[in-house]
Image (cartoon, rainbow, N blue to C red; front, side):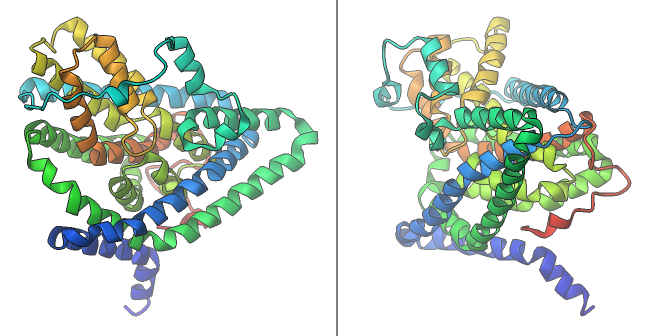
Length: 425
């Protein structure tokens, strides 16, 4: 018994501290909302440290993984499998939302006729080609270091990894540098996560004290449907995906290791902030490094089940608001196409879905009356959407590891024994 207690504290001590911080933060936000503004800087410090660590961590994780893929883990097979998993889960999430809206229709919220001109402002002469170029590339190297250009940076890191892999013996030293840099950044993450209970607790206090009351306003019904459906998808479908990847043992490992990523996603509303945590728990889920270091960073930008579901809800609310038929077959097909694009466009930062929402409004040619509803729904579903977006990358990586035949994947009988599984809980 005495030995079991130290082992329990070793394995779950950080999780217990994290939960304690969240509970205390929620209580403070609920009963003392006047002081949450003083606590928010603590959460901002924690989040800024994560953001600062993301760029180098992302580079070393992707570049080292690609550069050191061996013959049994071909890059092409991992990427093609990843694309199929990403697309499949996004479509499944969208279809689940459409079915739920069919059986549980919601009324459009009564919104003030406010404008969103500042959100729509941009270069009026831009073509979609111009926007695409800016989305996937930058014209100066220093711009890659901004999280606003995350997809461009991911593509650049990916290409550096391919170049290092193709450089043969001459590039051996550089590949070792990438591996070393990846390990250094993992240790930096461990240091940053030491203050997670304080940082996440402060964020929970701020959210409960400021955002919470808005959930009971005009948008209660569509929000309630989204949160109930999101929770159902989170528990049921993620369990099914984990079972497909590793049987019962895969389900156990996924949920046992998914606590910290879930808490980080909910409290920060940021897929980027959750991405380093996802990478740290991936070994515990039995995900090989070659798969995790490619799928999880790319998934942060390209794989968003929560954004898929919120996109369908926002289109539906906008259509009901202006009296259009959402369940017309062509409308539904267009909605699925827009949802796939929105899942790619939505950035991994808080409230980063505005660009995707503008894409939706532009494609359908929706009138300006629909814009406020779309903006408000998009903002208030952000915590659940981020939870599905960010933690969905973990279960997607488990599926990719399974279907790509990567070494070290979970089996139904026994788990993966990794030395770095105790890095952070």
